[in-house]
Length: 159
Image (cartoon, rainbow, N blue to C red; front, side, top):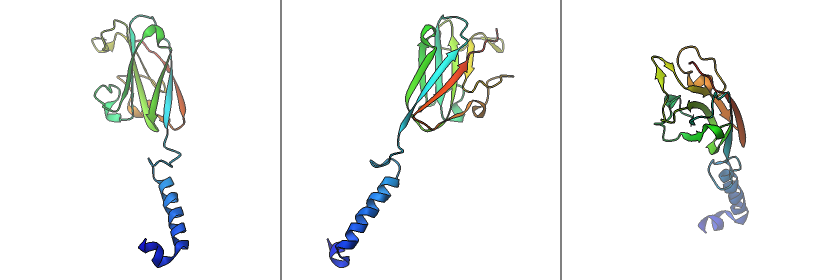
């Protein structure tokens, strides 16, 4: 009340408008129109069989790619291979993400290896060329910057 009596009500109105304007610019406030989450739609093709599961790992942290099982902020799913053609993840914050997939044909929840080659299928967002080992985060990274973002991932098999 001291503020209004010292400077008059005309300044109080300006202060209220300024306060509302500042609140609208602060991320995470009730008036922030850009504070939304997104949906990631994955279209998976090239599965060699409908056996087992497809393990999907979505992360925004390069340190936890391609195995994001230890990333507490990752989004993961285990989907029956017969239902894995289209998978969606809701509630993702906008940012840069990468996706890694494993076709776990024997349903043991891990990638089986034969010496140094994977026995089961794998795939990554943006379908980077695989030379030796998994790609780096940067090669598979894409932006989630809209309400709905799609990625089409082709499964690859070495054996």
